[in-house]
Image (cartoon, rainbow, N blue to C red; front, side, top):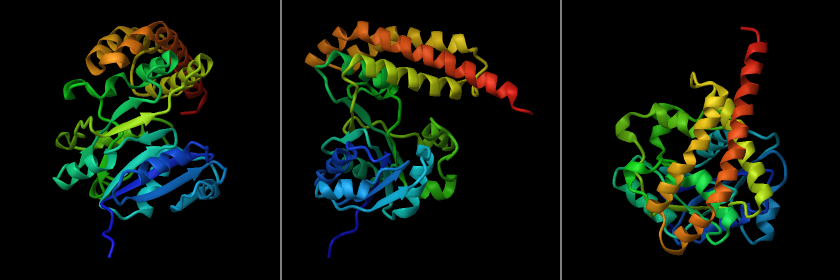
Length: 292
């Protein structure tokens, strides 16, 4: 009789991209039983895509595109393992990703975060993308400097503290974690590494950074008294801190290539800062037009 998996992993897809095949394969290659579920929204058809790759896992299709919080909640409701993790369709789970999570959860830890690895550590554009997005989640960072995201959860937390906010375009995980008491702060576990597929071309990087900035600006302007220009300026100033974090969290050739990517990082942060400014400004305009 096969033992029931301890960890459910909800793979979150949007429009069934081809990359989701690699995401699921990285979980099947973990070497331990997992309860894998794909939740795809916005069209496409993930089931035959996976089937053509020789993969047979449950898939839930949602016709309309939904925010990540809603996809998370669908996955939570449709799985039963005592611990729940999530993996985006542009990410891969490194070897040991699941085992390290289960080890902590089985020892009584309610929430376990993860580090991020670079998909193309020798490509300068990818290095810039990596640092722009994940400078506070580098594998070599000490716990006091690390941001605790990419979290897996003890399922009982959702019964006690509710589910993810389905109306938030971004930061639904931040909002949920803020509901938890301080003693349930996620453990920083660099052994749990997720590979994010970073852009390798400059145009794609700048477009992605602007888009991310626009979403972030619209979100942050509703949570702070700072003006759009202040939000944008603060983001651009991060480049000095990112350089310091890279020297702490990376080593060897990976650090060398990261240092060579700094001029591209500056362009990426400028693009994101522009996005933040216009996202925040547009949100303020829309809020003024909306009747109170």
